[in-house]
Length: 74
Image (cartoon, rainbow, N blue to C red):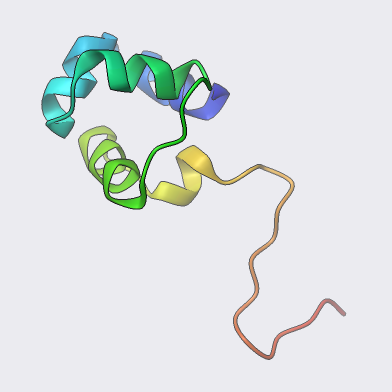
């Protein structure tokens, strides 16, 4: 997951440091960052908090637009 790794490296953190801040096993974090495992919503939230950003910034594909219910593209 490119956004996840980019955010971590922008903050000059190692994988184990993010895992420790998030309260998850290092191997779990590593597998998520490598795209070999999908996080639960709870784990995604912990990682986002540890990195000081939103879940969307880390896990939502860049080409996806989210609309509120009832909104449509013009």
